[in-house]
Image (tube, rainbow, N blue to C red):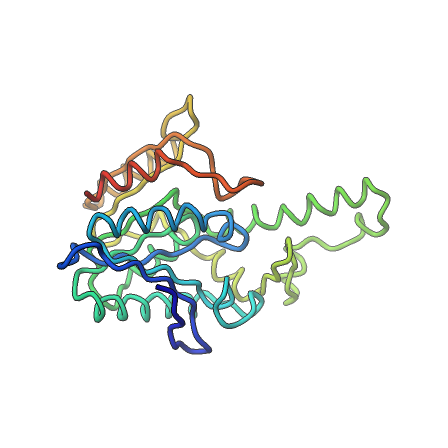
Length: 268
């Protein structure tokens, strides 16, 4: 069920999947990833939302401010507005469904969920983290490298001025927005994300973490250290490795059936 949720400023595009059960087992809010990763992940999010609805969960997908079909331009997006969007969506779900609310985030959406849960204004049943981003600055650096790569390609093609152009970080430091792949990143949003370290956050609700790993690999040392740190801090953590490709970064729209199956089984 698509609808627009009144918000401030403007409104947010939402897609609601009601539970296929007379009494919902719970409510789940999906938080999408950053920039173009949102579009690359839409199919996986929709498939998982439908699977969860079939299990008896009511699921709400929301396009954050300046993203997707919601009000605003990406250049006007701000971290505090995104957090406010999540609170509004959680309140809508709690009132509509009348069941405990969980938040499910992918990539930077998982970091946003962690940041909200760190000081949640309302109780959360659990956090579901799909391959979470922990270091905000590293994620923005990765995003900005896309512009550097495109400039290097332009220089190889004979474009003028590529070497003399200031770096994206210099432009942000000077208060200018930086365009990357059609997305204009404002300094205010970049600075807010730069300051975040999800590894230092310890939500009080249970955590279900699904980490994508290579077909011939295992959970990486950084993820293992983070899991150990959370458990040492008393977190109720379930870490599930899933073999598959990073569908959010593919040039094609990919599905990762093992991720869908593992998530569904964990919440069944």
